[in-house]
Amino acid sequence: MANILAPFGFQFLGLLNGTPPNFAPQSMLIQANYNVAIGQNDAVTMDTNGYITRVASGANPLAGVFVGCRYLSVAFQRTVWRNYWPGTADSVGDIEAYVISHPDALFKVQMSGAAPARADISGNYAYTNATPSAANGLSTMTLTSAAAATTATLPWRLYDFYSHYGIPGENGTDDTSANDIVVVLANNFINKTNLGQA
Image 1 (cartoon, rainbow, N blue to C red):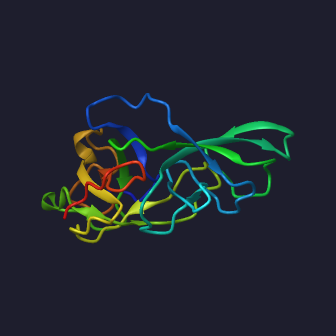
Image 2 (cartoon, one colour):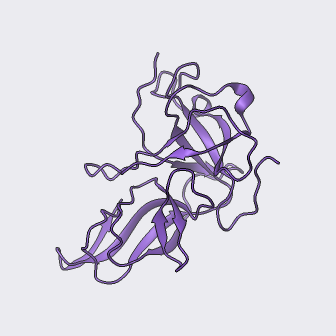
């Protein structure tokens, strides 16, 4: 069954050692009134002032994957919890962001085009940056569909096909069709030694 392109960014699956996805994300900061939207499951990096920002396509290294935030809202006059930062001037002070930054975290992500071959496992990939959905707050980032590279500075390494984890027939589990879903491991989280191919 052909896969449908319905990107959701980098969704945390668990750790390399099999630990389920139940540990606390790291607390980081978004600078007050940062005007770029950050969606749940967006890859983020850290600027020179120690704040996270949504990254440009293929930017490296990464701080991790954003999963939500809380801040004091001007509009609601209270602290709000959201699965995304809308990129509007609605905060009083900096925004507390929650980021999956564990060096052994595995994420599922949709390819934006041709499916990789089994020989591409352990190869390195860039990704495409896009504005998150304002309707549900989810990321729309995808992994590039170009052939795997040996360039260790690319941010993601192909770990496996999601078909080994998902339900048969689920969208993205047809490994022979475009827009399949794969499992990746970060090469260059800022708190991780580079594990990319030489």
